[in-house]
Length: 168
Length: 183
View (cartoon, each protein chain N blue to C red):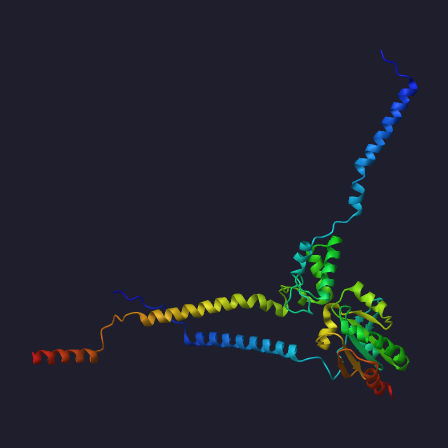
């Protein structure tokens, strides 16, 4: 039979307590730096927003591929906003507020910009109608005549036949 | 052989109305495109009444150009990413210090820029006259600027009297401002 002296038990309990505290600290330790370090948006995430924007300085060059310093600053702004938890739409709204609606790759369907959305389908419909009319006209022109030849032509044929008979 | 009769054509009056509408629409569209092209190609506003605008500075002050009537106003468009702007930054600050007591206001309009870099630029060049972002690029569109730097000079009556495209030096600044501040 083993006998445990009370002081030995107390020491064992103390050691266990210290181990438990240490284990708890080890388990919880990785969580602290993860909370402190904000997730950094990747270049792909930044470019996903940037490609929907155009810098007015570099016309016709989407922000994600624009090489100027101004565009680099804009991309950095997008990165900061994404890091701060802004949504894609919130970032686009911010850029419109700061630099105007012309920074958007797809202009909002308001005012004159509405024409951008209306004209192409309208032109398609009108063009289709013109083609339909043209094809119908061509088909009508190409259709063989079912009506008898005019009387003058008939008379001409009759006279030729009569002349040929006379020569036989 | 059967001959299917063609569907009846629209009445001439309806056809004419359709054509009229079509051509009118096309003419309106062409006019719109032409007007847009004209505005794009027109270049900066260089004379006449200066376009009115409101500038909210980086310090939160709101400045209306109309409120500055009676003063000579120098409106400078710049950006932190603009290298030629750096050439004139010190000149503009020196001009502000020289003419501020002679009824001249300087306003800096930060064009298509990001605020941290713009503030750093102002600190770097020690610029103290009011500066603010061109929110929505409304001011630059009103002046129809083509780039930065551009500087506009407005006399005491609110008339645009001179436009400087590109960086300005002290001699040119003085040659423009001296006649304007002379009573």
